[in-house]
Image: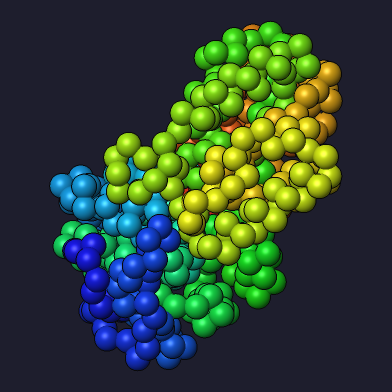
Length: 479
């Protein structure tokens, strides 16, 4: 696949299909035209769903070793073409090339984990004679694929978050209709090519691009789709939940993740991690470090060292291997971010560095003493903006972290085991990171949140549980 301008096609029932309508995909960094992308109609979406529905039986009957072999082959093909894959991500998402390469490496791991888990799907035996009347009966459970899965993915990890939908779905014998983000469809078409080359049956994967209102709504409401797995904003996720009816739904909806810095800790060791967590991929990460609460005894030291490190970041072209921070995904996101920064300034907060734009790039921004009611505090900023606030105690910091509509992950740096245990117990989030930033994720761990960060869990084994149904079988030995 080229990264130069070209016309793409829909991928339906194992065929590359000319669409009725197209839109132009442009680079977030330069604005140049990258490709003509299909804008699927309702009829084209219905055809994709019909293909996935028809392929259910073939995928369900496919032996586990064959499903595993297909996933292993995709991982191998992606390894061979990893440089091309990274450039696709960098081009369509303006993700710095080094970060894009890291995403490709994680995507390879994700498909490998899926291949392994395909061979480990099992149930359990149940001793029915534990209850009166259960004598001479044997019970066991199995897990069966749920059927057609509608996968709706965001722009920020256009290969790895797609892998977190496709990997467990195919490992457990399901079929998929995939709607990638409008800004990052090239990654999904690239992956479809790899699955086709790996021998995935026709109809098992269908890729349809277009508007959320046309494509997404059709996927969510069609009765042939048994489950919807979505990563994106709370507003869209709540709408999906309301429209999905009795479908199973997994939602990963982002956060305004925080880290606590205790007085008993080594500031120098955490600064590189915190800067990475705040500004990696321009802060466009669901678990990006957005809020930092530092004990008052260490506050000035932390702020000074954090700012000094942040000022060393290189701004520029995402295809330059030395770039740390590049363009936000749209000019509108730059404008929104600047408005939120201005609101913070008007309220009395201090913009220590940044707060300005260079084209579609928002310079890394550090805000001090931001009130908890500001948009930069209480909403997901999804931009290279981080707040650093002073606290007088760990209890105060925990309360501030929990005072949020979100709850995906949170971190705490401390050398005191009692403080660490308190944070692990009291923080109301899906994951607590001790002596690390909340931006940490590896691809086999359970991942998901509470409150408006969504529900359900990703991480291959945990996603397989979401994508399968439990069946109970009982044998009566008295007959």
